[in-house]
Length: 491
Image (cartoon, rainbow, N blue to C red; front, top):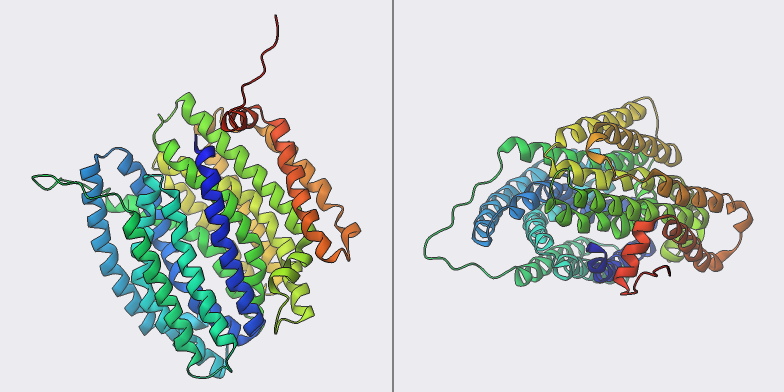
């Protein structure tokens, strides 16, 4: 059902992420792994990061099930109520960021010192101004997700990335000066405003009624648990990035670029599957065969895509890093660090594939409090590791893998009764086994250079092919998508 919608969505999201990688590549070329690069990354990522941690996940987990039960008029009224609240909260949160900018810079990029710390603090002024735009955009994107307008939902990020790429390219052509920061900040605001305008145009037409439609919102406790469950998950990589930054200037940038090689397949494939599956799951009964089948399809797709990404990135991380970040001021040593860290961090995609789908189950059943405690335990473990002296990027990546694996296991244990018939373990073992065998060939691929990129694609296809062969459900859905009738045996 959502597989066909995923084809167009995947294309749009792919184009958006390509622009996002172009932005990261331009940043690496302009600033390299330096303190200036650290400050720019903090400025660009903070608005969407804060919105994602506090609001985006909560909006999806709370509003999608609510809208599935409401009429169009009620949906419109509840959307308006949330929009007013988010606008006010965005202004207030922006003021908090402005007032506490020095504290935030110390927490997000502790490796920045002296003038670079001042630069990071000044950059957060622009982040604070962009927050209300990002918050309202998160709400409207959630509404488009409910309407299954994936073109509108994903195309908005193209405008943000295009504006940021333009800003970085302008700054790259000029010597860094006091005028460079306003150029980057202006690009951030321009991109946020353009995305908001696009989403507004794509929203469904307002329902005209002779009297206002009543609309009630879920109680505050449901919002709180949903916000905590989504926010704590995003907090883990943020904590890891800050821990790595303590080793000095440029470490945050290196960790950020390494995590981009992990984040790309996470957002492009795994979270896309969960996003497409969520509306379908909320429209099925809690213990129905339809929900079990929808969940099984989501698990198989997310897991297979995660295994494919691990096989490609873990084996060919250096050629990928060279292609994306090996430009301008980026040094050869810096590329090797990025490649090594990403090859370790990409294994976190396996637990994150399970987590992404499990959260849809828990949100549909309004059981998000279990996820909160699991994430809190993971964050506490990562924090204790940092307090004990964990700081090197490689060690932090491994600790992040372990923390996310613990979260996934805890969620699986808590939802075992509601997952009957949804987890086809034999089907999941096959792509994982193929993935591990392919990664073991990494020592043979040393020095392949740019030829490693098509080989990475081939590795991913092999893993996906193994999943297709082992999953009857996936074969049936793909056959339906291609409109190829199933073969029937002759009597």
